[in-house]
Picture (tube, rainbow, N blue to C red):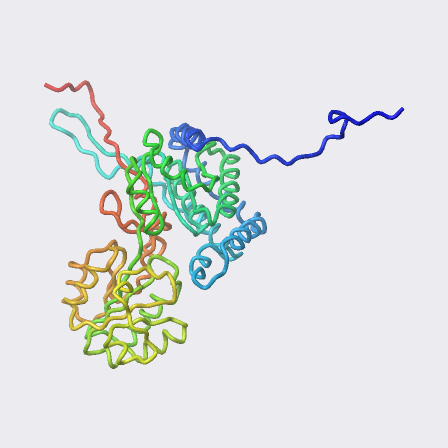
Length: 439
């Protein structure tokens, strides 16, 4: 006799269940607690152990190149390739060469002198007490950044060498790339003796997570943001943790009346074209009116050959038929693309006034053969780096001889300009006494 098959008798169907995510406050709390626990242990590691870990991290990136490229491809596919996204997509993209550069950068950090324990001076007080200052880690550093996956590797390496735990939060557009890089680096570091949590990565993309992270002042000692205006606004509104800003790069090159025109052309083309999607690329070109007619047509031909779109003031447009009229919004804009705003100025005073009004205090350059004007430009222009007869693209930790950088600070307090190992440390006072008391 046949019987009806009941629900209980039916074969079980395999159902894929979505993972249950922890509430954001709980998730963030666990991450920062683990990071804080690792802080004291990491600060006590020897230079030899840290260097061995860095070399292991670099080797791991080389070994996992294909895996990283596959994860990066997921991010690129999701990001899209519309014309307005070209510049950002370039920052997001990983290649074999860029991964090799990341690994090479970590090896360079391993070669750098360990800043910890340095004592610039020690002095003896009248009561015989010796007082000095010793360089120590900041502690736990939260780094919030957008687009470029190489920031994950650079930040992890510099923080580890300087004895700082890092809590890394990359942009959602690079979530697969950054998660893979952070996992590879932390695994290699832990196998080499670095405490778990020293390289902490926030592997969830929700925007709501950032304000929660910015309130963790019991666990995180410093926030370093790297990104655009919207990110900086969030940081300013929500952070209860001290912040060192790495803000927009609205960089100018001013070509003075006395400039060597061959030099000026080479510097301007390099500053705009060499890698336009970076924060130290030139965004506005200022040219003294007495040389504009001579310099601009030849310079514009070189820029147009490199597919640069020129947006010029009325005088510029008169000299360059291919230039588009610049709007007020074009001055002070970080294009991060092959777009250049150009303005002809009557003198250096007007150029410096323009920089003061529209610049972001990141990088400013003058091309001139006049010593007095160059010294005045150095003294009066306010930026993290001011250059004479050199491309703005040179404002970089490696180019400055710092070995590497975690970014370019546009803040005034604690650190300004490229932040290398020393800028990721602070001092504590030490006292050597023999029974002294305060009378």
